[in-house]
Length: 228
Image 1 (spheres, one colour):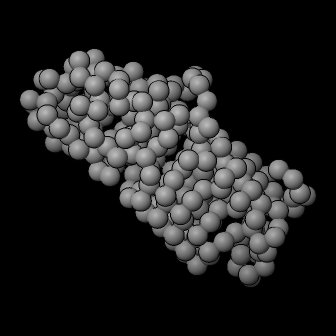
Image 2 (cartoon, one colour; image 1 turned 30 degrees about the horizontal axis):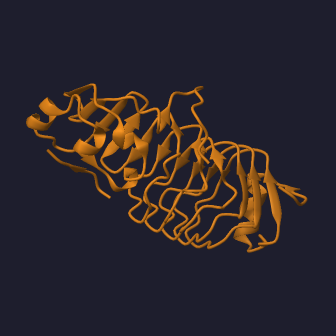
């Protein structure tokens, strides 16, 4: 990432925002966490490095993230309903939550997330790329996927649960975000209902999509429907 960064505390960034003195051309380095929850801002600076987590939850008018962005911790953009894309250079992150980002079209720049991913409520999101990987878990509408389990929070008939073992995921679950991902070809080893949560838990090898913490497997760069 070229260019000289101006080191600032989170408090200094907040003060500049309050007084309208955060210039788009600036390159800013925040040594810790940075949280901004301002429903009036549309843009930040052009270059931003955050050594901790970056939380922009509720910035409802924010249309773009800094084009040159490095985040060492979690990237939280929940309810950023005007955000349509992620920076093209943002290839790896440590955790992503984009819940309720209804205008977001793609997370394609991110090939690997070294932490959980939350994409619930991203109504405009394109299907995940075939080589996308998350760590620990991936949450999408009505589903949460772990390295060894695919959990569905829909009311699934007992007849489907009975025939699920031996079936491929694509035969049981048709989710638009997974329509291009090889996890659809994984075979269910067992199926059970979680009596406490009411979820259906399908046992599969989901490591084509979600890997365990500390594991490396390859490099990555709708509402779910159940059918009988």
